[in-house]
Amino acid sequence: MKRNHLQSLEPKLGGMPEAEGLNFFLDDLNLNLLMRFYVSEDEYEKVLPLLSKMGEVAGTELDELSREADQNPPELISYNRQGERVDIIRYHPSYHRLEEIGYGEFGLVVMSHRPGVMGWPTPFSRVLKYAFWYLFAQSEFGLCCPMSMTDSAARVIEQYASPEIKNKYIPRMVSTDTSELWTGAQFMTEKQGGSDVGTNLVTAKKAGDHWELWGDKWFCSNVSADVALVLARPEGASAGTKGLAMFLVPKKLENGERNRYRINRLKDKLGTRDMASGEVTFEGAVGYVIGNIDSGFKQMMSMVNSSRLSNAVRSAAMMRRSFTEALVTVRGRKAFGQALIDLPLMRESLFELLLITEAASSAIFYTAHVFDQAEGNHEESKKLLRILTPLLKGTVCKQARYVTAEAMEIRGGNGYIEEWVNPKLVRDAHVGSIWEGTTNIVALDVLRAIHKDDGGRAFISDLEKRLSGLKNAHVQRAAELCRGKMEKFKEQVEQIVQGRSLEQEISAKRFMVRMYHLFTASLLLQEAEFQLSSNGGYRKLYLFIHYFQRYLHLEDDTGIFDKNVNEWLDAIIDWESIPENIIDPLLTVMEKNVKVSSKAPTK
Picture 1 (cartoon, rainbow, N blue to C red):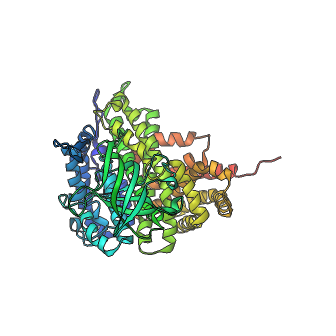
Picture 2: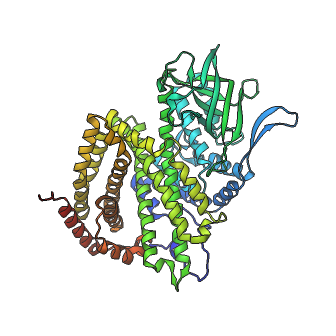
Picture 3: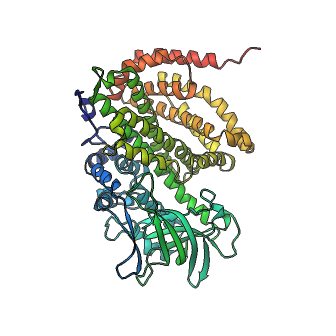
């Protein structure tokens, strides 16, 4: 196999290496395998040069621009020199160049809406679309928020709005010409409620052919958006989320004047500092009802759910970037007379990051595949997507906080300095588990998807179908390990279906994490089967065994596995051949351990 840039790095005493100038696609053989697995051979061959171009830009210009924009956050200009209220957001030129790359050159918003982006003959599938986002977000996370909201807002408008609204707004929102583009946002959060959207107080009053909105929104990302979808309560509507309607609120009115809302201030955020989030007061702002006036919250949640998957994709991307930075560091730096990569505990740290990162990539691209099927009106896929979206949001986004912090520690003191990329990754990673619902909220949403939306049955059916479709003898043996863990999980799902309890809510996060590990372990098996069928060796099956041992079996006696990691880590990183005789002993030990641990205790 041809050696890539990451493989060719040699330790240099006193060196301070970083992942500068890499092609994030060509140096990611795992992403390459996932593309071969999920898309047709013809599409794969056609998309390779486009992904390679995105990988090159992400590893060079995009990375430089992102760091510069992060250090030069936007500024709110409330008044012009004549003392008139203008509420203009002034961005650094580097941010505008990021917009040109994201919205324009690669069409990351429009690529799944219409054909023709980068010469592609059809709208991009979700799998292919998120491959580009995965590469982009390894350098720039902040802009992904406005792009994601613009994308999902256009989709909501297309699905629910009147023909007049669609014709006026959608062409500008899915434009690749940044001089014509209208970006989108969702203004939902209020002071008194936060995640409890049912307590929202912003009101809407009918005024002829439109409505007027009054009140305050507390956290509005992409506050400079041209089009905001806003939840407000029409006068006389019921309390709670059922009384909320969705309104399209343009930044400018038909006569060119600014709409009647003001930006009070910008948020001084921990991360995503190059993207403007602010506080807004509506003072009779003109708004137009989108869809059914009694279904605003449900319609908004369809936008939020799409953003949740996008959020998980971005978090997985930051994990991949963090792993890359850690790998470059340990291969290019020495300590105590050795390359860091040769120190046993450092090898363990690096393997852990690799394992978590690859599992996350498996989860996001499979879910993107399910999204494609759901958009084709496959009912079972819709139910499955309903539960996978919060599942990934609650786990992958949380894991990104750990992985980015561990990669910072691997780099040592330099990792803590803002001149290096690690602090930005750590800061940006933290917002992933807050936006679109905190971890607690989405863990409860997983329970809700099981209890009310048939999500648990769809999840189990999908899991069983995947495990039963495996053909390779070694992979089948490994699949039996997963089946052994499924019985208890099925019992828990059935209990949730029967009725929610206090105990279930208390353990919701732990349940969600176990569910995620079972899900991703099965995906690693599916990829292992594909790799073996392509004569690609046992690497993915090797990763499954270690993933299962660490996150599903939790065996205390890990000696054979630890020794094995130390011996084969370099081959795993470089995608070299893992021989069959390495797999058999590990499977045998795992089978014995699982069998012993499953015995009922004697009295």
